[in-house]
Amino acid sequence: MLEKFRRKYIGDRNFYKSYIALALPMIIQNAVTNLVSFLDNIMVGQLGTEQMSGVAIVNQLIFVYNLAIFGAVSAASIFGAQYFGKGNHKGHMYSFRFKLYAALTVTALTILLFVTKGESLISLYLTDTSGSGATGAALQYGLEYLIIMMAGLIPFAVNQSYATNIKETGQTLIPMIASFVAVGSNAILDYLLIFGIGPFPELGVQGAALATVIARYIEALMIIIWAHRHSEKNRYLKGAYTGFGIPTDELKAIIIKGLPLMMNEVLWAAGMTAVIQCYSIRGLEVVAGLNIATTITNLFNIIYIQLGACISIVVGQYLGAGKLEKAKDADNKMIVFSVFCCIIVAICMLFIGRFFPQIYNTSEEIRALATKFIAVSAIIMPFCSFSHASYFTLRSGGKTMVTFLFDSVFTWIIIVPTAFLLAHFTGLGIVSVYFLVQATELIKVVIGYFMVRSNVWLVQMV
Image (cartoon, rainbow, N blue to C red; front, side):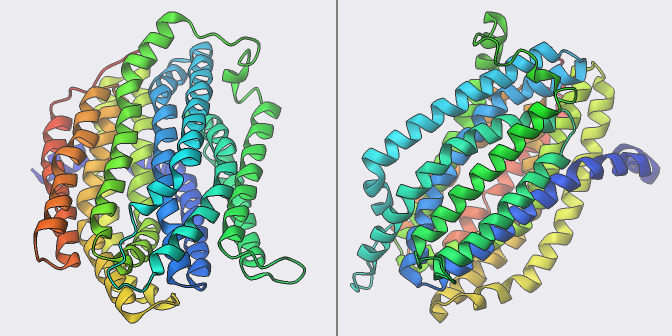
């Protein structure tokens, strides 16, 4: 029985070598990105609780936009990975063209929303429980930050269109290098512009936003220039700009399969934002504590997030080539490996996470809250790893309506109402509320297990 388990769930040296070779650049890229976000957060945190909270709220709103872009490009990525696996570079080109159109459309709508409703959106997260007037200051800082951050949305959208197509071809190193340069620039500019070092003006939260925008333009330019200079490695670019159309069949297929996925990302992100809003009624201290905890937790979460993303690439390529049994075998082994890695990471996070909040220039109450939030996230992390891997498994086979139900519908039917009821109508402390809301992930694990086991995702679409 042990041997049967080993053959089904444990790969050989070559399997893990190829898996890690694909995943490691993506993990390193996101580790560096999140590390710089962490340093950025610390530097803004040195300015004060109001500045940190205002920036955190805006970043939560931009998080919804980021996920909307991810959903827009992922809609075509389902087909992109399979087109590449099949060797259909023209089909891959049409999926790239769709990504550009969809990402820029989402960006235009987001800018319109932020320009017209930005102040109202930020105000949703500001509850003055102490009567100190700190929420007014946080709102002002948030608006200053948002105005500048909008200038970085367009390069982010274009960069995601290119980078995801490049990754679908198995070239994960170049996006990693571009990300390194960008986040390095961001970190240096943060330090210079937030605190006014040398000849640079002291801009505070505006400096943090300006540094991020400049870094996004640098990353986008690096990716675009490299892709066009290496057209032999990026054959989907041939003819990409000689026309504007997408064949009706391809467009229809992407929209039918992709729209639920795109809506899923938007609704899921909006759901998570709604959950944060529920927590925020307990006071500005909770917003600040969650900001610290989330920034730190993101550093540890990258392992399971990127291992899950690799599942969609590897399994998608096998499915596109018609190798269904290999897709199933690889999926089993990658899910087990992802969960195993996350158990190790969660243990590390549980023991060392409590030291991070001490770095911030804020009250002891906020530090204590952040420490407890981090501990809860560490306990739940292995379960998140399994449900995340299940999500990408289902997505790789084009089961986007299933993933829509599994992810965003679950969020709005289970997670958001749980957070709302516990935060508004119980006397439970905010940490207990946070734990119970996070624990709903166990329900998702059970659903994901049975969905993956059913093999409903073993489909060749192209």
